[in-house]
Image (tube, rainbow, N blue to C red; front, side, top):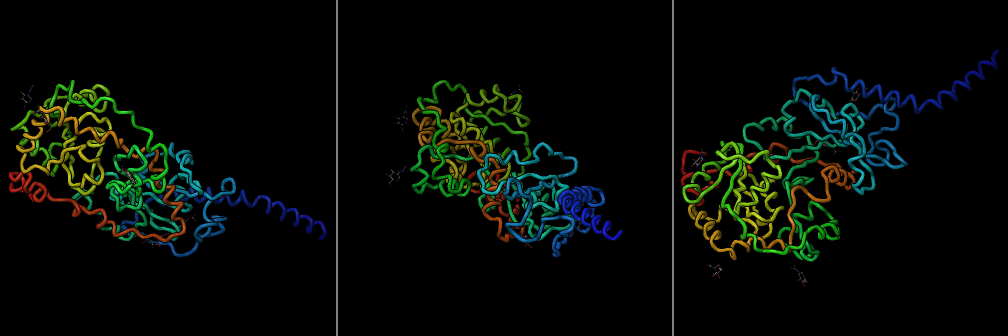
Length: 439
Ligand SMILES: *[C@@H]1O[C@H](CO)[C@@H](O)[C@H](O)[C@H]1NC(C)=O
Ligand SMILES: *[C@@H]1O[C@H](CO)[C@@H](O)[C@H](O)[C@H]1NC(C)=O
Ligand SMILES: *[C@@H]1O[C@H](CO)[C@@H](O)[C@H](O)[C@H]1NC(C)=O
Ligand SMILES: *[C@@H]1O[C@H](CO)[C@@H](O)[C@H](O)[C@H]1NC(C)=O
Ligand SMILES: *[C@@H]1O[C@H](CO)[C@@H](O)[C@H](O)[C@H]1NC(C)=O
């Protein structure tokens, strides 16, 4: 009898050893279900985030440890995977992004993978959108020492509406914004040299390109191959219209509408969208784009006066390279855009002076066409060609996998205080606006 029970023990033992991986997997699913449960999602109401100091429970997570590097995460084909979770409101379903598909072309040593929110405990990077921070009731309530929280926001900092950031001053490890002091920089657009030597020589926009593309900036052949040879510089010929503006937010606090109104006293401005009585619909359609291309100038006026905030309004016009964007914003445009590719309203002491200059260019095709000579050296793009934000994140994670990183106080980093007040902005540019009753 004793012998039988010994044999039974051995059989049981072998069985258990064989089944162990499955059991661990089972427990992992259990864990995921647990985290996905509403109990987990419920608020603790305090907004406090507790950092979990104890190692992860190994019985539950199997291979998981709190060590950095090697032992982290799952193994796929013998390689580790960096697991990224996008922390989103429950109603935002981004299931179709899950998996490794979006990282396939990233050429990183360690592949990345988007995992569902339910896999939070096993994730390496947790992406949290600035807008979503407001709904703090649904924030993760704890964090593991190896996890990096990534603050991301694709728009300009907001004034009052972003007060809630103060609650998260020590929450983040990484930042992703359009601004070049973010860890991961995702601009609305970029201009790239068409010849390698412009990148290698210290042109003023080179540091920016390097920051975004890294080492690829020096070698990537696609950087230099996208420009269609520019055959005709007579852009002025065949233009039937003068100045266009299209906007939907007519009460932007930066007073751009006031500036347009002042400009209209001196030059014809065709206003499309809600702020005018002309329509260009559907927005971004081929027909509408064609209409805009028939103008000589486009008022690419930003709705925020924040550093480096250059949006698609500008990039779309430069991408086409047939309309001169007139820019209103507080970026140092010369660091991002080719020389003589745009007109900055701050270079004129009043809207009338700007109007006079536009009229001068309108009369003189030679002068107008000079605004397109940059096309010999650069191409302009919306977004960052050859580089998705998924790959930017994955690359960054690869390069900094073992580092402890702490983001600056996010309320200061993404503070509206960094932006220029209209009063300061229009001083010497449109004094009527500057001296009117605004902050
Ligand atoms: C996920 O991690 C947290 C923090 O350690 C823990 O409270 C929770 O129980 C974990 N989930 C499970 C099922 O272990
Ligand atoms: C870059 O530098 C090289 C060598 O100094 C020079 O020959 C070339 O003209 C420069 N190119 C540009 C675009 O400035
Ligand atoms: C559109 O606005 C312009 C300028 O404000 C005005 O002169 C014109 O009469 C308006 N047209 C229509 C159809 O309302
Ligand atoms: C246009 O501008 C150029 C450059 O300043 C000048 O040489 C030319 O005479 C001007 N043409 C006319 C028609 O004014
Ligand atoms: C992430 O940031 C927190 C808060 O500043 C910090 O305590 C933690 O060490 C950081 N983690 C990593 C992996 O960098």
